[in-house]
Image (tube, rainbow, N blue to C red; front, side, top):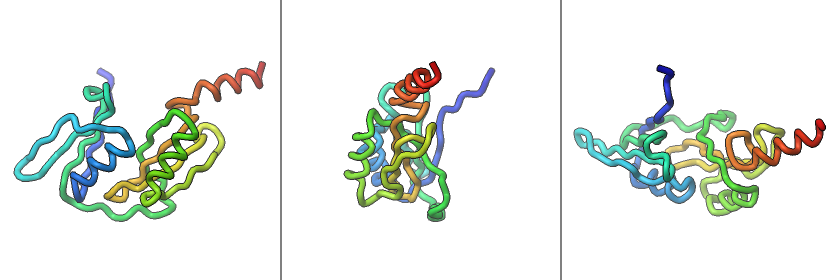
Amino acid sequence: MKPMMTHVALHVGSLDATIAFYREFCGLKVVHERSDAGTRVAWLAEEGKERTFVLVMIEGGQRAPQAPEDMSHFGFALESRAAVDEIARRGGAHLVWPPKDLPYPVAYFCALKDPDGNYIEFSYGQPLGPGAEAHDAALLEASG
């Protein structure tokens, strides 16, 4: 059987703050919550993807702050450039990468920092989400 990625698990300082952040900015919902020997655990997922991929958040533990040159992040696709700008505006207090354009496949993006210092990228036009079709059509037109 070929392996299938199902989750990423992270320790977080405050499970409630983490859930609130991912709900507000990423549209994720809690699909499972429990307490293991006094440690709270929550699974967060996109609507309709609850059985294919989740973020497992485990309360307790700390991680070192992310260095400014460290590009480690989670990526979320948005439906438009305007949506990227709106996330940057709403998440101003969390903003670490202001909106900018880079050559394909990076496209248009910004990033926020979650309550535990993880970077969360929001993009439009990458090959893994909305806007990829427009870029692919432009490439075909230029080559044809």
